[in-house]
Length: 177
Image (tube, rainbow, N blue to C red; front, side):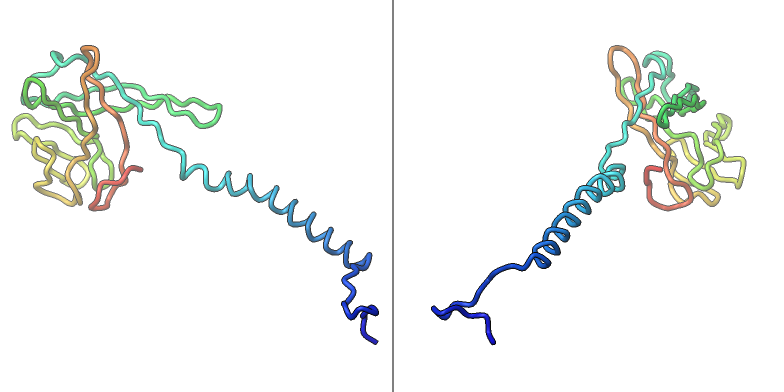
C-alpha cells in the first residue's frame, strides 16, 4: 500500500536511517570544505604574492662618466623562510646623458655568462660563445636570442638606485626568472 493518509497527502516522514545519512553527508561536506580551503590557499598563494624587487644603491650620479659603462658590484640577501643567503651580484651602469642612466643585468641572454666591456671595440663581449652587444645592449654577433636585459633605474635622495632582477635565459622574450 501507498503511504497516504486519509486526506490524500503523502507522508514526508524522514526515517532515522535517512536522517543519519543526510547528517553524515553534511558533516563530511563541511569537513572536506574546511580542509580544502587552506590547501587551495597554500597552492594558489605563491601565484598571487607580488615579488618584491630590491632597489640597490649603486652610487651617486657623479660616480659615472657619460658614455662609459661601469660595473658595480653589490651583495644581495635572498630570504627563503628563515634562511638568509648573501649573493654577490653586479650591474653595468651607463650614463647616457647628464640625467639619463641605463643599467644592464650583466648576464648574457644566451646562457648567463658574465659579459665584459671592451673599451677598445666599444662592445660588451660574452666569453662563452662569442656573443657581442653594442653599448645600447643590441646583439651584433653570436647566439644571444635578445639584447642585454635592462633594469629600472631611478635617482632618489642623491643616490642612483637600480631595481635588480634576473631573467630567463635562452629565450627571445624578456621574462623574469
